[in-house]
Length: 238
Image 1 (cartoon, one colour):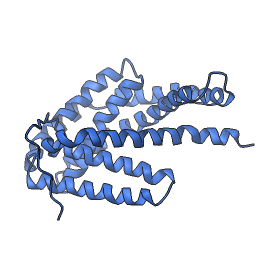
Image 2 (cartoon, rainbow, N blue to C red):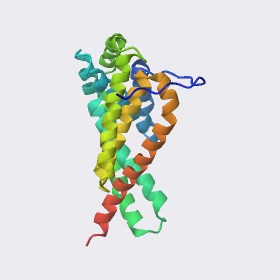
Image 3 (cartoon, rainbow, N blue to C red):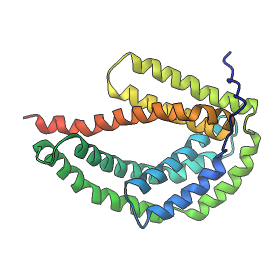
Image 4 (cartoon, helix red, strand yellow):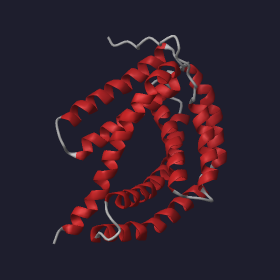
């Protein structure tokens, strides 16, 4: 059976648990509402994903309905932010990849810039409807429920190991193809593993986080390029 690697003597962990990220969601929400730019969209979405990833792991050992309730509470906002984020990232990549005089760049920019205001308004509407009081109540409940799986415990190691094994399977599938979907699935699986370790195994996270983030970022760039260029292929098709 796989075991968790020992920690080097010099490793120090900054523990950012579920409570930290649930509070962070509300802070990032306040930043997003007056200024829904690429940075605030990204930061809010990352905070929500961290919460949802930990909740999904905890549901495996704790049947309390507050876990799925938390994931559901943020689902609509998370999805609307994702659509807006995709448009923003595509626009950024188009500017990096082609000169201003490039006709395909002009076509893609026009497409993205036309859709972005509508996506921004949709995300803002959802953000303004987000029930912050309910989120705070869930945070109080889940802070107590989280104590059933103390950080660094055997239960925490088991949950992280399950996420690791899942990421390994996704990696094996991705290696067998050049199609983008399996690689994107690997990226999501890696995020789930990373965020679970961050919350439940803070000492290991201090050692592993840099490498995990590097791989995640590389896979993210591949995904962004695929999503950016796909409309371009359609634009070139007679």
